[in-house]
Length: 109
Image 1 (cartoon, helix red, strand yellow):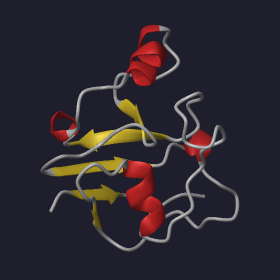
Image 2 (cartoon, helix red, strand yellow; image 1 turned 45 degrees about the vertical axis):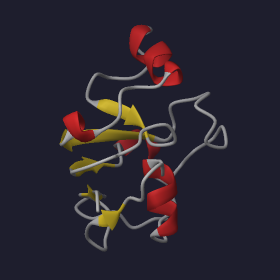
Image 3 (cartoon, helix red, strand yellow; image 1 turned 135 degrees about the vertical axis):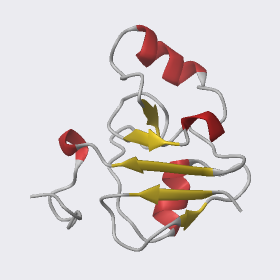
Image 4 (cartoon, helix red, strand yellow; image 1 turned 120 degrees about the horizontal axis):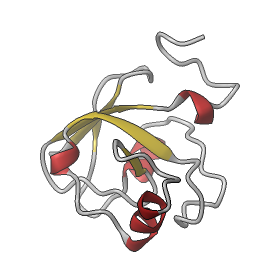
């Protein structure tokens, strides 16, 4: 099964089911993750900084391409509400700018 490891969240690798977004997988694993637009791809608050495994993700969606093309989404980031992981492993982290104040992040603060 594909796995997502978020370096600054506790708990180790998260299983990602077929057709599931990274955001849904993280939430199903019991983590809170910022997503101001309600996971509709209309903002960039749910972004994940990719450390490795970007090639294992499905191609960027139209929402992601819009933000990539306007510079609102860095090339090493994806929207967790849009990105799917059909196979392999992805390692990433919650960006400092979108960390929630009530969540204890590993190695931060």
